[in-house]
Length: 338
Image (tube, rainbow, N blue to C red; front, side, top):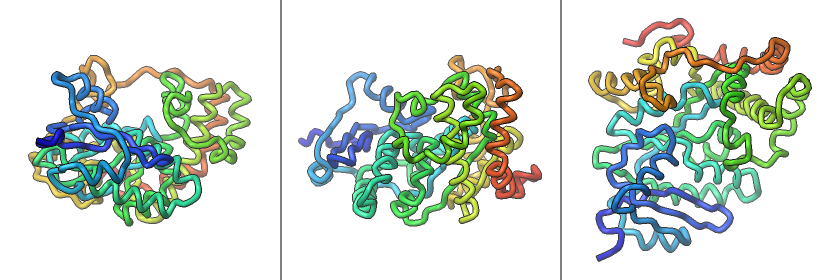
């Protein structure tokens, strides 16, 4: 009997420089946790411990007895961070036919590698890997959606090639509001804890933050603001090319309409009952440790000094104006889809 008989060996790690992969048995996983890494940790803490495999991509792909090929990818959700994208991803997780992977580190590793040479070869490897290694973990799953970390949208050309033009969603929130959230809890990529792009990729945006930086931004905050400027600008480009642009305020105001629009954009049909189950995740704020607060609860934020906020708003003004103009008209006017 094979070690992997009856297992659902899902990709959990990829090293583009060595073509090495890591798999873990995620049979039965719903991925209801806010982030993929939390789903993996939960599986590793279970008893008995989940089966893990690591090694060369080609060797493991040839040797795995997978129950099926990878799920068909319906699309990708890009975002600025701190913008309600986790809530949206949690709503999709509540739909049993969808497997959504939320910010897995292997997507970030690939985005970083895509800043180097030979991206065509890397895209070929990635397509091959995804077609075999992103398998359903539950029999009900028929569709795959990927949500990378916010800055991964800077590799959108690479992901366009990998996914062969699958639909894209871009969720955004005003820069000053994101910076206030970052003040309270900086992102791991901004503090160096998680993978991030080479500094040279954000040189232009770092320069654009200089005026604001002189008014009190720490180094992680300067990195975060540079990333927002670059990420939001790329989101505007995607919106002009047909991506669905969703503002944070629309998520707060009419979450049901947002979920309907996203499902329609991704080409996924669900019943009214399933839709209601998905929308109900807004009753629990996913990042509240107590699990007692709804998403719409007013969360206290560290406030930016007025002069700093004004400087940030000035730097972000043109991008925010472009994104506002690209927002779906139903989101802008608060009308509900029938």
